[in-house]
Length: 230
Length: 230
DNA sequence: CCGTGTGAAATATTTCACAGCC
DNA sequence: GGCTGTGAAATATTTCACACGG
Figure 1: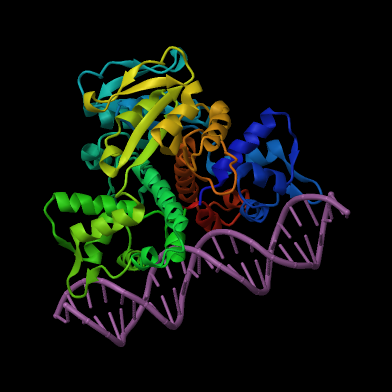
Figure 2: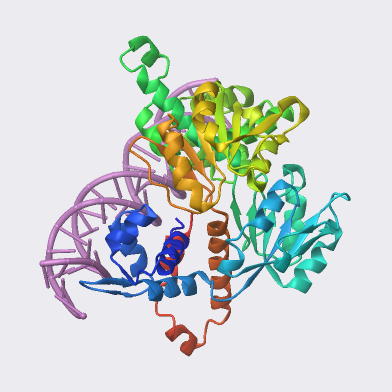
């Protein structure tokens, strides 16, 4: 479960829109969760709401950002300057949430030295060999792996050896890391496959009533659905 | 939960490496899950293993692909031809799993008409106005939103109106969709924030033993950690 | 009144542990 | 003997429903 960041983003948007107070019901709706779940989540942070009124938007946003560690800057190293690496560098959401890209690395000679990013936050692609130096000089806390699957484990090992303990992996591979290192992964094909599964389920239930068809798929659709859902 | 796609990918890799049989223990390790969980997940599909032996790699891979609906091709429309759109078009993992990009759309005049993709699977950026036509002509089942947050809800509405019922959203916004439409979202900033949270927790526990410091953060770290974990 | 905060109940998921089959 | 498949137990998460404070 990772809903705090969503709450935070929605609160930031509300604040920008000039809203000063929200009820759990309103905020929950905007975040796509139930109000009971939202209140339970927030209750873990403390009692920041006012009964009969709701939550102060800016105050709650601040409390969540403190909780998430967004009040201090985190250095991010991105390994892989392909299309995905480019997309990450261009992504506006990082800087605004306290993430600073302290390095962008790639193994391919053609892209090394390339200058990316907006004029104010320019970044140069450096050779993969500089990884250790970039991590220690830049004080990077988080490593992002945007390389081909083949290179991912090696890059991961080097990031860990250099002291990085939080890794975001876009390569379609299961990384093995020592105890204490946190890995999160984003796999585009996996997301599409989950959607395909639901499409298929819809197609299947469209021919419900055909007994022969039902016979050839002798599993429990309900529990399988539960098994694959988020 | 969405582990079937991972099992499938690892099985495909094993098959390619010439492995013909795996035990739940081995496969689980390669997938980064416990063997009990793996067996429980697989038991929902049927009894495809052999006691005392394990699973036939190719057979199990096929059964999972059937389950996921990977045995038939799914059309994918990508809206947004920025860096992320480019990355998605370039991603090899789609075609190999039965996903065909039937259209790539963008609102920006500069990129319309641009040709992307490898020589064999070329794709041209078409104007956003063609969305409805591309969806119906291409028989698209899945829509991918890779636009700025601002445009996402409008694009989503048009995709749904055109008949798309499965959406993968990369824009940092909560989409509202009618009943029966499945939305999955990938938010890069959210992933980084979750990692930042863990970094912060580590930093906090580093100054454990300082009572004053503990006093100023009067929440239950354990349950919060549980609340944010995947 | 209204809406938060929260115990208690209902669900869901994960883990255990072992019977059963190859 | 080894490994799957699975009930039963242990955890975790979500939902309910309402007491309590502003």
